Length: 208
Image 1 (cartoon, rainbow, N blue to C red):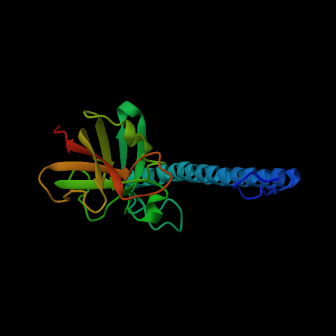
Image 2 (cartoon, rainbow, N blue to C red):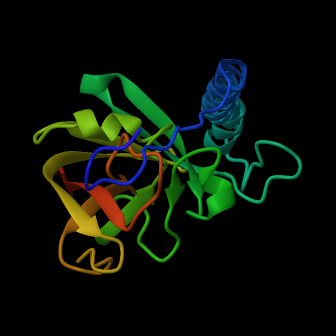
Image 3 (cartoon, rainbow, N blue to C red):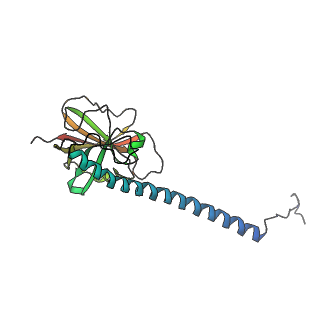
């Protein structure tokens, strides 16, 4: 049947109901599998970080006892050099030598081209936002950060500033004036991808 001035109507063919249901079910299963895999990966990363911290604590005790470069496990290519504590948040973490990707998989890393915490200049410690430095989002101006070095000396810093910077233009000068500390992690905190932005917590040494 046609209307005057129009083309004949054509019957639209659709997929059988059974095929549509099967396709929807397959899509739902794929989404569930993807979500489960992402969740499992996240749980694995956090579990590895927690287990590593237990082993690092033991190596840290050996460092405080005077052992040089105590490896937390035989094949480790890094070792504890410091421990940071934020009392208000009840957070602490063992800091490893070097901020390489391998070291940071297990804990915060001290960037080797910056001074040790407490020495003149800006000491930089980096860690992942979804494990050891997730608490940085809750740090506030005025908070104290205690850093104990491997020789047993403890330096206290007071948080003076937080900033968001581009990785290639952070403005951080390792050998600038003062005795300072920078805690660095990726930003934003809840992102599933890594971009060029970094969240920085800056602190000034508190004189005893």
